[in-house]
Image 1 (cartoon, rainbow, N blue to C red):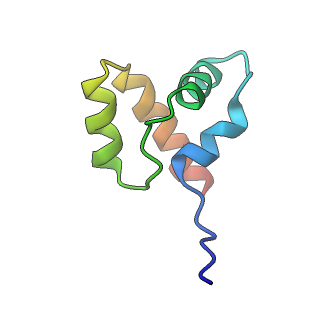
Image 2: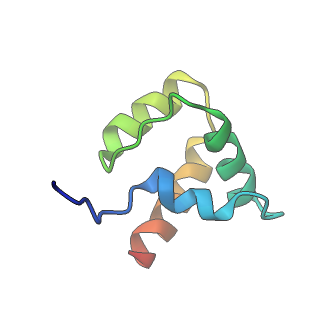
Length: 70
């Protein structure tokens, strides 16, 4: 059995659900979206968000924060 200890962006941002800040809003949206990519592939996430007309500028700020906390 292989154990994956890698924290994906989707699992990381889930910790911010319910936070009364833009990151919390993003976390709530992602939690409700069962099709949001559970990957570390930034391009796949960006493609998905672009297709769904998400706030890319906000995502990029959150992604930068995520990268700094890994």
